[in-house]
Amino acid sequence: MDTDQHPIEELDPTQCWTLLRRADVGRLAVSIMNKPDIFPVNFVVDEDSVVFRTAEGTKFAAAVLGCGVAFEVDGYEPEAGEAWSVVLKGHATEITDMYQLFDAADLPLFPWHAAPKHIFVRVTATEVTGRRFRTERAGAAKLL
Image 1 (tube, rainbow, N blue to C red):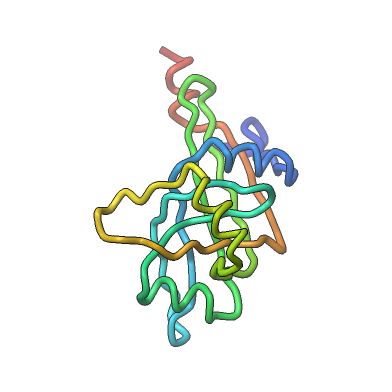
Image 2 (image 1 turned 45 degrees about the vertical axis):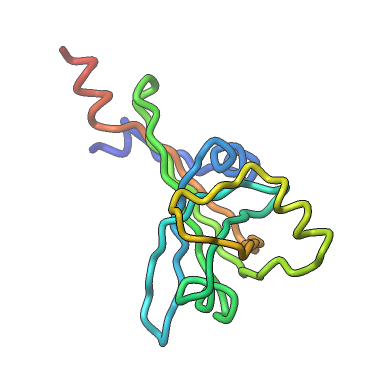
């Protein structure tokens, strides 16, 4: 794709959060024993953070015990012929405060998998970046 004709638009944090609020599934990237791993999670945006539910295990331990996490969400808007990607970098913490747990339990966040997921994790961003770009598929459709 010719980037002069199809520039990549850098998104500001407000645009990134708007796109995140429209998504349901993201990918949590962690480091486990110095090896990267990625876990798909369904999530909700709560103010300026991402909240997901999980159970005890590798994903939970790596997220809250590690030195940092990344959280990524992509989207495609076929009508506009545009794709976008948003990445949060920051820290994950287990929500343990009673009042915050009550608030988290009220979020519209329901595990897709039947296994119990009683732990709420909040990813607080220290950096939010995103970009949007036209896709080749959109250009091809206009030529027909």
